[in-house]
Image (tube, rainbow, N blue to C red; front, side):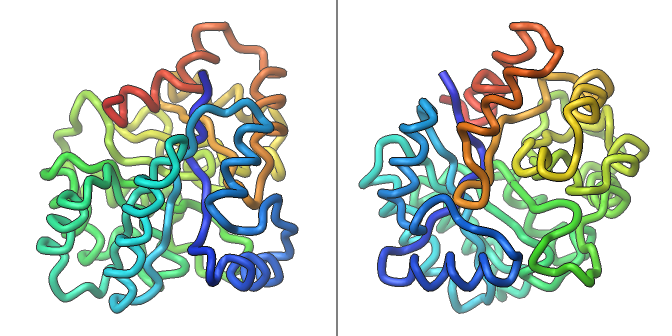
Length: 271
């Protein structure tokens, strides 16, 4: 069993344009044509059983469309589980989080860089607190984003740690429901180890092998614990088959590998 906790796709009508524009901005070549159908093809080719789709609401007016499409993806594709999305400038975040739950979506994706807001901003704290109260999972981009090479880094490990302090008020739960993508902070491994290792938060491993040697990931597993790490590829920007091969090459136990590849995701998603 393998669950890819970090994938992306777009509505068919705009998929080609979306992957082309994003790819050019970040100097990346996509592995799919951007559609949900082609994402399923890529996952099947890698022998991945489920992909968690993470949409981004880049302006408040996109809320209805993005979350409607997310629900449609879930209805049409048995191997995909799309989260919803919300923007920090949303005028009615609580009502819209309730709407996300009514649509049957199990979590929300935040992207501080695309949404122009630091992860420890009070607008995000309000959203995260309420989403947690409602039982949702929160995934946020973390670290450097290739689409914004000149910064600022809006979810640095230090800012993410501050966000956790504000959300939990010093009383962290036993089971985390917040996920920091890209190993807790893309290309910021030293700060991840300094500020986040051991905290009540999940990391997904999407895309980090492009910039970090396997030894860094093994160090992260030892410091943070395999029970709080999720497999992810960042498809279409990463190939899940390549990501699986890299996990297979790590010097970790079979139990740790099983936790990372599917057990943690099953627990987090309450499958």
